[in-house]
Image (cartoon, rainbow, N blue to C red; front, side, top):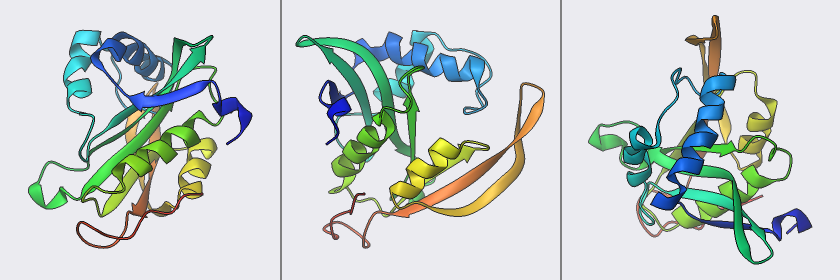
Length: 188
């Protein structure tokens, strides 16, 4: 792995991360159209989201945290796999996402998080992963394509934020054969 990863630990998100994760997400709420949330969250409002991502199973939360002199440093980003839709027939599909902390972009944090996430999901009964990318976002498009996602369509002007309408491009990735025990997932 590149040397910039040597000081970064990827681990499951825990309740002690709630304030830092909320602050990170709120940056995207306030400053970008990447998320279509328009009002910032308190940590208490984000607690159900955090708790909906256990350490095992289909729906995970992984954080990348800087290590400084053997101690834990700031959270540099997080990746999740979440339910794709609420209906039972969608259970073997997940929606995945990555958020990097302001200033952490360009260090390979998104790549590190997605690699760890897809490795963690390899033995789960998941058939497809989906990702929505608000346009334009070339860095996110490149990340998803690097992990084998294919563009399957774009919702035009589907969300309004900051007085503008935004497109969302949807990407899909096969996570193997049908059912448990399928072939291992390949990584870039």
